[in-house]
Amino acid sequence: MKSIRLFFPAIAFLLISTGIVAGRIVRPWSYQELLDKADLMVIATPTATNDTKEHGDHPDRIGQPVIGIETGFAVSAVLKGDKMLKDFVLQHYRSDKVEVPNAPTFVSFDPAEKRTYILFLVREADGRYAPVVGQTDPGLGVKELVGVAR
Image 1: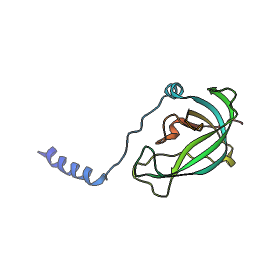
Image 2: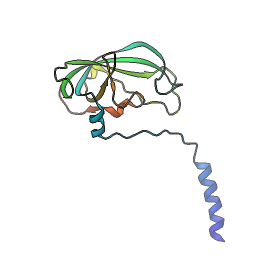
Image 3: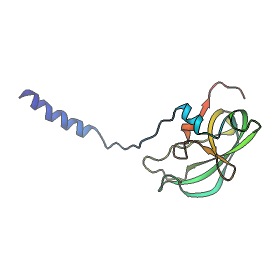
Image 4: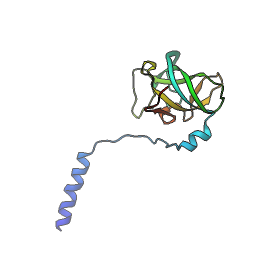
């Protein structure tokens, strides 16, 4: 009988102390999956970043307004793809003021910081590249290399 008297207050406390939790499933990618699906795998440093005229809903997440971005990269090494490639343009997005619940996680680059990244990319029809994982969580296919000289 004593355990029943403790059970109900414990359940009540649990229900009161927890808020509504929202989340979405994010698919984990192994490095082998990233490599297998990539058209291009490079070590590169951003050189310039500019907004494009692309404004509207995120291509994969209706209701999330975005602005298109093009970031130019200088290639340090090509690990998969065209070994002669010296530079390329990455097409990605940023939030346009309003962030919706469970929104995509975007990537951003500051060329002034001279950071180096390993990028797993697919070539788009227009010649630009996009993250192999898609535009919803592009950071899963873009990894900063710490302690790497350019």
